[in-house]
Length: 219
Ligand code: OMP
Image (cartoon, rainbow, N blue to C red; front, top):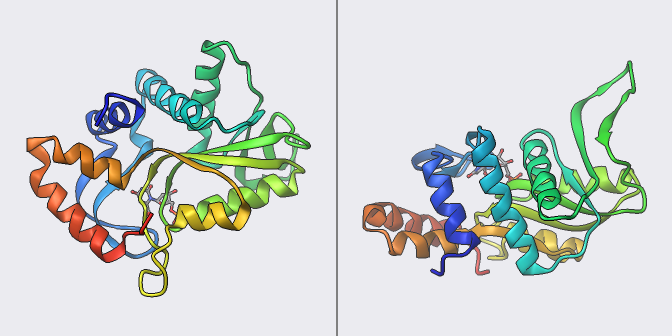
């Protein structure tokens, strides 16, 4: 694997302990031999490095957008860090995020930051498994009058929503349903390639391959 944003991100995630191997139960109920916890990018330096990986992945894809949206909760620091990274690279982008509980006092509402109306919005989130979290974010953007332009996530787990019915990935399903690009910094395929080149990860790679055989998508 070339030393691009994918391998940089996977090395960083392992260093931050954000990518772990073991036995985990997912939101979907599936038992997974790995888990990605974006909450462990919990320092300024880790977030800055992570944001560089996101910005490179977005740049490599070439998706056009003019506002960043971070869905609560994990998307909020991610989108903020990516906005800072863009500013550092010379592009000052508007940034918005939501809160989960509507506030009845003060400024009220659930949206914070730059107005989304009429803007092409790029969603910044951590991971796609079944796509539930992303669908919620798309509804929030539509209700605010924004135009969804795409989704960028750190890790695409490349899981089929219903492996017995179709092997289409959740990310691909969301992309097809909404006609949107779903850009990932790295995918399960990248993780497998990375693990293949790392003697310490031989046993983990076997378990990842078995998991992919059970739940993985074709794309
Ligand atoms: P979907 O909404 O099913 O796409 O799953 C995304 C959510 O799953 C994330 O926002 C997390 O809450 C959680 N998750 C992880 O954070 N990391 C993983 O490796 C796997 C999951 C998961 O439960 O599928």
